Length: 256
Image (cartoon, rainbow, N blue to C red; front, top):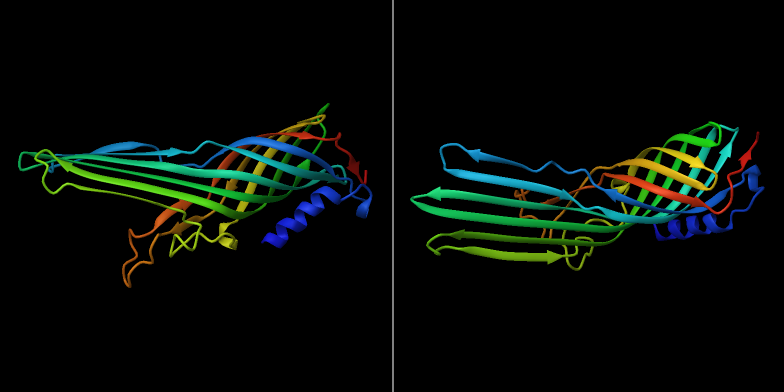
């Protein structure tokens, strides 16, 4: 994967006009991303005097990158890019349980963050609309995970202060030295399918993109034989992105 990144960076900077009759326009990109998460909700367990509330919060994070694009036959657009992105979510669990006239309070929080380099490759349909250039496109996004952060804290407390439980844990789920079942830095299962639309005016481009991936599982320790359910942590490798790009030169069409 590192060789692929180096090769694509080289292509981004050194592809010149006229090579294979393709004129590339290069530019910078700045945006914001976040992952879809289940909405916060609460519920009561009937008959057990138990109240539970769970909340999921997405991480809103910046995206920076470079991109190159070209148009062929007036209507077919190809793009390639290199992006840095951070993604993650926070989960909070709270419960109050009344048993034998004693209230038990349980709280747990989980935070996960992942830093990655992304290489989006897209193709789509574009056309002129006065001075605007709208586009619809699909593509494939290669992901290389650089670093991860996972933190969890668990507290179980009761009113009479007996049998209280408390622990916390943090580690890098991308590191093989810190995780026995890590997130692979690069894997075909870590890549994403791209669906998006963009609108260009002269050198400015605004894009709205949905990157669809699969769930990635990780754990600090390998699960015991026969013990799998509830042992792994899950990271949903899907995100929404909105970005503003600036092309260093006006867009040029080829093969008119």
